Image (cartoon, rainbow, N blue to C red; front, side):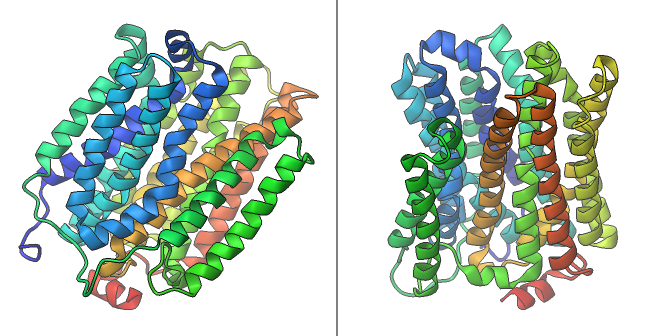
Length: 467
């Protein structure tokens, strides 16, 4: 059945609905902080932890769930993800304090970890060539577009209906997703023997990620030379070295490092990590225009309208460019445009009106570049993954998105906080320069790792090359 089934528009729609339960709804909590804090009566610190838990848990477990999807079924893991999304959203709808908020956010993180790699693996299995690139475009519209719309959608729903309605809508979309993919046949890798899982690798990975996250987010509060910070740094470094040694010595692994021997896959994944790290620009620019220039939250949201329109408009354009000339050029063009957009937002010495115009243009270029980059990059990673490891490979690629975003935001906010002690303008400029460096590194990883013919080869050639 799996071999004869061809992916339909119904399946693409169901997949997009699944993807936006995280990118559109779960992410909206970032933009309704005052309303949630007032309603639940919890501290800002607790709420910030609640917000970051979803991205962190999705980043930590996404590779494990991608590998699991290959072994026990990609449709099954997608369905589990959608059911977890409903449970997590329900916890938030019913929350009356910190407990259900935290539990709900953790469950939403697990949900995203299931949905993201499993749906990409379904696309790889059931669509070929131009159809696959089209399906991945819609997947990207769900994720990049969803994250662009979430500040408006979240703010709008919270203002007129109340913030809990964000998660009622999320439940509705998850139920629709379950309905739309129910007729899709199961897809999994051919395996022989008993099911095995790398529990040791996952345990070490969780410890490393938690230590690194706490180090970046709370290092400046604890003091960079305090014993706690030094212990966290040591745990992170020793843990990372141990993890790599353990993974290389085992047959059943959490992260198969041999995937990175495939240069196009490695280039797409590294550049994806770095371009998601540029998300820190949004935190720096939004905070600076509100604190330094007296903008309201709504006005600062309006500044990023160009980002939203550009990213949605350009994703299908990126797909068409990919089909005409391959993946490398649009990935390079997209990265350069994004980096220029970010760089001009650092011109904080400009007076109010010119700076406002510059930030608006910067956001539009940011979205334009990411829109061109999105589909060629995702297609390069998926088409270069061996068919028996596509869930795991997609998991690593999407983990790069989640962790890139989490660390980019944390690093940018930390640098902005440290440098703002002298002046807000200097703080914003240095926060932005950090993100320009991420853009330059992303550009270098594409130039040196993605071959000229990426995206032009037919599926069989790339799969043979990857295997």
